[in-house]
Image (cartoon, rainbow over all chains, first blue to last red; front, side):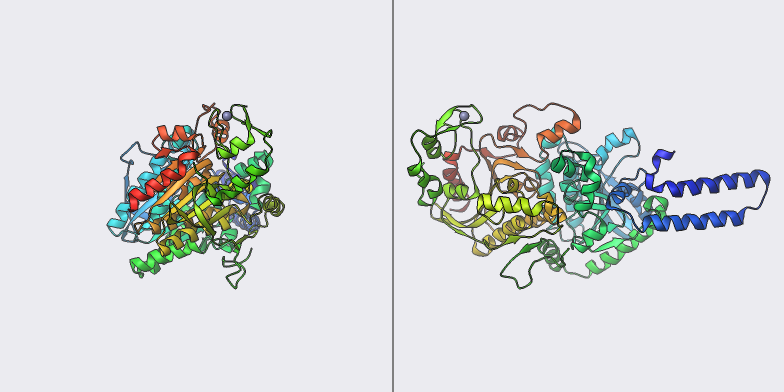
Length: 331
Length: 272
Ligand SMILES: [Zn+2]
């Protein structure tokens, strides 16, 4: 299915098709074509290296939205055992756009919350493309509060183009739900690791992204607004999203430079969707590293560190402060 | 309502204004005598439409003895975003302010408070780094000096020209409210037209009490965006203060002339 691949992946897919064809012929004619195949495999790696060493911001947005990209439940399945999903906000409903529950990660029990996208049309609707409704954020809040009470660290996986956009979400207080989730996360006395695994846009993302560490997968993007929405506002033309995606500085490299994330987790060559196992291993190792460091802190140190982590973010001139601006590094 | 001396920005102009000058109400099209309209705190005597107020006017009609904090904080251009500087320079000239947020100490019926107001005329009252920093310092200093906090928002939300730096202000200001809550200090959030998106989805929704002005638009995603995305038509009052009241999202709707009195009453009930 060609449509499942991105335009930028076409040269790779072409070589893969050649390899498949040779393998098929070799099997039917009983010939040894391994030299030829090895040469093509090598060429494929070269092509991939060339393509992925130089992705434009817009290409990264496409990678983050790749139809084959692993979603929260894929990582939970690959990384955790004993996953028990919990449901409902005890007030209105159960939001499919957010999964929340407990699981075992490297032997330790953790709470995991995550935006969950759907694979097919039906599931996409059920999951609302991972865009959380108030009841989803309130469910996440309930589970995070429980995690704090039982001394379980929290892993929050972010993958959304924003919060639910509907009259129903407005009627049930999506603003308050986003605001309250941030307020809550700022006070929970357990370590919180946030990972932007795909898309991290707007209030729908920051709602569950207030953690002690914020990590990003290499091809994920993080932005105050989706490039399409920004282009609509600036130019009344969503088609200029590609251009705007560069201006908004939304890649993992940008986020690291702005001091908004602690670490970029490299993706396997060709992207997370080409090697879920490899990606999960890297993700698991990064989470483990940061969790171990955070577990050494007292609850007071943890809260103070989390507060200061966000407190220092911003770029402005303050004549009272010797350094021209508060943020770590100029862009 | 008796006007305080600090309401001078509104009141002083009264003397200079010719009696025959009129202002048209955009809601009911009535021609209002400008002098009367100003005396009515920029509301329509006919349909009670509440016109937007600038940040200084807002603080002047609500408080006395205003003393600005953090006036020296100035915005930068973290993304080198196209057209940000010219747009911002124009807003600075238009409003005479460095950015969209005005904050400081004041009194309300002799009670010391901390207050902040955003100015819609400055890039839609959007929240960038300066806005977020001023709000955070407001909460921190209020906590230090044991002052109740009032904020009056009039904003379209986060300032996209500051990208992620602006998104981070949502987390930063929400965390500052959480700290204030550890002390017995009330935070009253006054929602004026419009109070939307990234600001409404952070500190502005976190008041102990949410007070709105009549007719103010309050919400997260703007009605037009929802209409375009879902290809639906929304009722005219969607996201109005009255709509949010009916849906349990705010505590009260108070006309501008009664606002100061209501705030003083709330503070007294919580503190005296
Ligand atoms: Zn009118």
